[in-house]
Image (cartoon, rainbow, N blue to C red; front, side):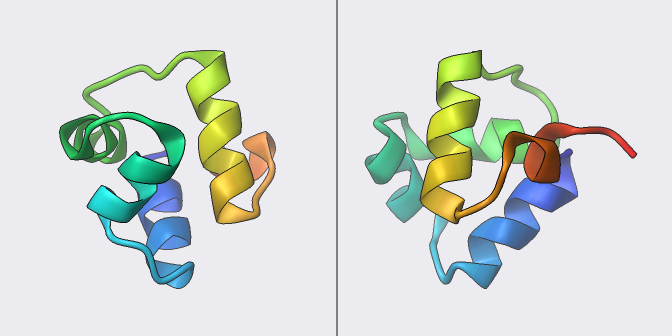
Length: 63
C-alpha cells in the first residue's frame, strides 16, 4: 500500500503538501499514510484515489 500511494503521487507530479491540501489533511497525515503508520478512513481513501486518478484497488488493495 505504502509504495503504491507514494508512486502514484510522484507520477502525478504532486508533493505530499500539494496532495494534502487537495484532500484537506495535513502533510504529516500523507507522510504517515505512505509509511503505513496511519490507517485512513474510507472517505480519505476515496479522496486520495480521485486526486491521483486511480481506483481504490490500485492504491489500497494488497497484492
